[in-house]
Image (cartoon, rainbow, N blue to C red; front, side, top):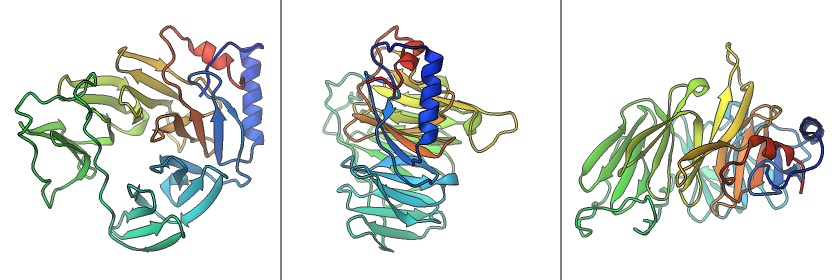
Length: 339
């Protein structure tokens, strides 16, 4: 992502130069160096093969990216150290999850078949998907975190053995359940269960504080929503594919414009950031030649991966936080390609 001190030269010429550079790179994964705090930076390395990749997902140690092929078909693992790509299954369609130690991948096919992929020796075998790691409960002093008002000794019991949905967040005071088939989201507390979304929710992401971001509607006209137990629901307007920063204070999402007749890729897509402490939303990118979609923060929160749905590249940028108040998109645009 681009930002920093102003760079000399005409902004239009800078954008044209960046476009030529991107087209010249026979790349599927690019590592982008940021010149300032945010904004697309200059590609510094690339793969030598041409494949269309989307949906980046980080390994627990931040050294690998799990990616899908065009249309969500296929599954590969990218080693960021040497940009090598290991194809796990070219026909995979479903959900893939890293184990907490990052040594195995649980593959859950759309038809219910479950397999396990050993990352170290690259073996694919039948297995049962490992459980999701439970997030740590934040300290009560964290602003905006959920602090129970009842007796802290009154904790949630063990999760039920059978439940229609996925457990996205698990703490002694809050559990978040998501049913991807019905699109329902529920928040379970010691005071009872609250219906966050009764139907049609997708792209559900939960911050370390237990804040819930989710989308409603089809992708071209999706709306982005927030929910937390202290403040209830909030509609952020148009937006999709949210990703929380590692400290849960910022939410990056994509805002895309589509042709009236639709299509596999948007006409234009940019990344936006909602800064919760300052209660503001700012645009992070201004790149007509790149359709930024599917942002994903690294586990340490120092990098942001996203997919270009136009070229099939997966990009990684250094992340240093939100731009300061008053920062203009034109300044972000002028710093493209600078160091």
